Structure formats: C-alpha cells, structure tokens
Image (tube, rainbow, N blue to C red; front, side, top):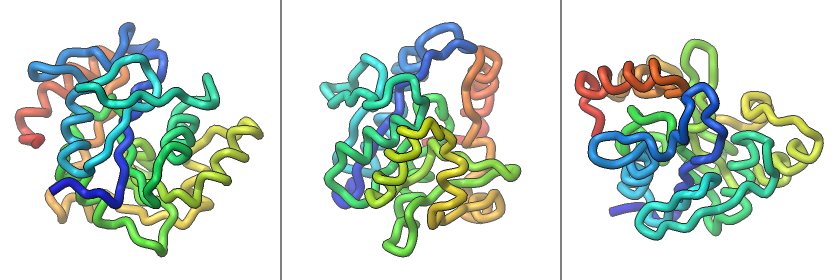
Length: 200
C-alpha cells in the first residue's frame, strides 16, 4: 500500500544539453524515462507530482520551478513549498535504474531526527534520489536567493542520514543503480545494466 505520510516528486526539468533531447520523453521499456520514474514513485507513495518540464503522466500535476534556471535545488524548493507532508521523496528522471524498492528503503529511513536522507557513493552525494524534510524549506529558499545552488553543501550542513555503498549493498542495492544518464552513451550503458540488475 503506497504511503500517505510522504509525498513523491519526480524532477523533470533541466535542458538536457549533453543528451541532445528532452530526457523526459526518452523511450524506456514501452514508456518514457518520465513514466518509468512516476511508476516507481507511485508504488511507494500515494501522492506524486512532476516538477519542472512540460509533460505529465496520467494527468499527474506538474509544478513549475519558482526559481527559474537555478538547477535542481529550485526543483526541491518547489516540491517542499507545494507539499503537505513533513517528508518528501525526490527522484530525478535521469536515474532509470533506481527501483521502487530502493525508494522504499530511503523512505523507511526518514525520521524526525534528520532533515534529509540520501546516498553517498565514492564520496559524492546522490541528492536527486533522496528525501527532504519540510523544515529545510527556509534554508533552501535563502540559499536560492543568495545564488548558492549546491545541494551537496546543503546536505553537508543539514542533519543528513547518509547511506553509503556498503549499506546499500548489504540491503541488495548495487551502486550501479544510481547511474546518472546524461549522454547517449550513459543511456546505452543503463540499458545494458538494466537486465543484469533486474530493476523492479
């Protein structure tokens, strides 16, 4: 049963310059990267929105970025501003190997002692497969107004629950699931990995 205490947001903005086309509409297993991300999110949470972009899935609401051309942090800001729940699950459309099971694993780690939950691989945060608490909204807004757009720096100062690669592996989630698809070459690699990872 999808959770009602967490709201889901699929980030579909961005200019996709290196990909050369709109990532949201890239075909994937009978659908698109956008419909794939929405499908995974809807298995975990009852209420899901698309942030940025112009496309919707099955009539799902689309939210505009309140701070235009400010990157994914602006998308997270729009998500928290719109949300009616304390915790909010965020997934970018260019992470096609992320499964609903991994999203559920992140959602289960949300508690009142943290401001955010994210994964860190090779010393780098994966901030667009993560959860954010509503109380981060004022901090994010002040950073956007000051032109400080780094989500990584936000996560470094927030009370962040960090899942490292060892923890993910022990739970059955290989690091390759966080492959970010930015180029046609990345997309081809993701398609090759999809069968071996048995993404559900």
